[in-house]
Image 1 (tube, rainbow, N blue to C red):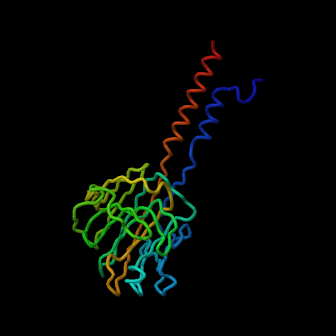
Image 2 (tube, helix red, strand yellow):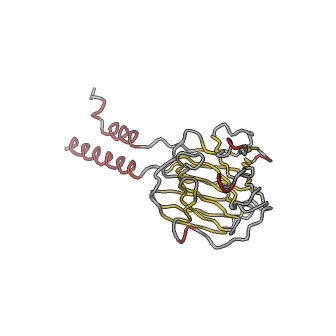
Image 3 (cartoon, rainbow, N blue to C red):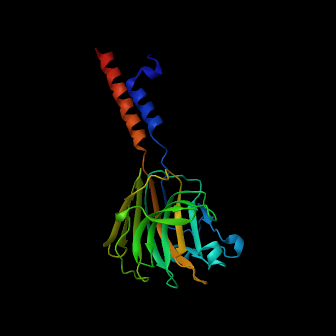
Length: 257
């Protein structure tokens, strides 16, 4: 019998197994009425303005009560991140079923997030700003949006209807980001955005809402649904797999001579 690792097919399979990253794909339609897979982001909890999480009509509602001191603590904001998952490159799709029209707000997803908390959250945000009716991708540092990550990372003004549901997508591959917005009922593409930034390499992913005004009493609320996350394999991993295949093939040719 030949030694175990002298079979080139076994060598190739072993190299491929070592090179392939563990993909942490995830989906949730929230019909279970549970967000046990998530960690709540409620930065104003200690100031009497804790976030509220509900499951209306099978969706996932995130509500941020008005900030008790907008000037000092910032606007109302809340979120929910997938627990124990760190994504580098990813594709995420989700729906926005409804949202509050009480005041201007942001609603969407965050990616590659680190240290979520009062004044500490870093990462990227992709979603809708009801102040301007625009879809955008921005970099966030210390809970502060630094604006779109490029001229094409923000759309023209859109006419949003709170009675309509929207489907959104957000992708990150290396430093390249893309996003899109569609009418959920018709599938019509309403906007697409793209940009580049290499500040954050990986981190948590989840939903978020935030009031876009420091006016007293301003809150934020949206209902999300049909979250689907696909982790994209690292290009370096695929390169290693290919290299292993070439080594095994060369070894096989030498053995056959």
